[in-house]
Amino acid sequence: MGHGRLYRARPAKGKAPREATYRVGLPGDGWRPLADRDLQVAWVQPETGAAIRVFSECSGHGDPRLDQALDHLRIGWTNWQVIDTRRTRLVGREALVARVEADLDGVRFRHEFWIVKKNGCLFDLSYSAPPAAFEGHVADFRRVVEGFSFPVDGAA
Image (cartoon, rainbow, N blue to C red; front, side, top):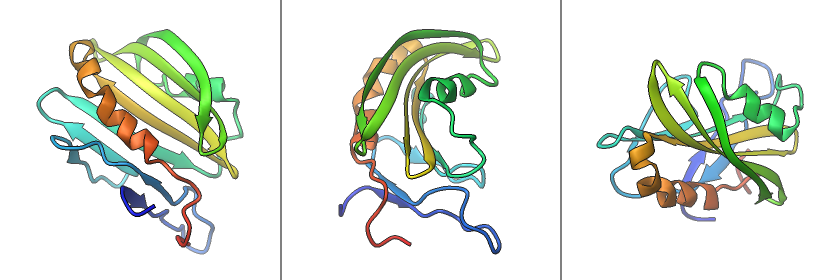
């Protein structure tokens, strides 16, 4: 795949990476990439406060079921309410897609999570926005998801 953003796993000193090298699609205009030591791939939409994040973990996750991995994402959020869930396929594996509403410091957000496991790695792709802005950026998030690929050929 020649488009999208490639994320290269950061190797730990003398150890296999705890994360995966993968590729994602780009969300489009209006999204600003975020760079932080604790982030792998993330964008923010400054006008609405929406955010997209992609995260991988290849060790230390304990091989949870997909619904257990979703439950883990609720840490730090209050008033967590699952709106709906469905099963689909992503990178040739079963994926859980969930829509959730929850509060962070008293502010309500709507989320869409895509969770998938492959080759010993757990991935979560997430989109969060204030409820009034949520539907306006779903297509941007779907471009990120549609461009997701793992493993990535030629990326060691």
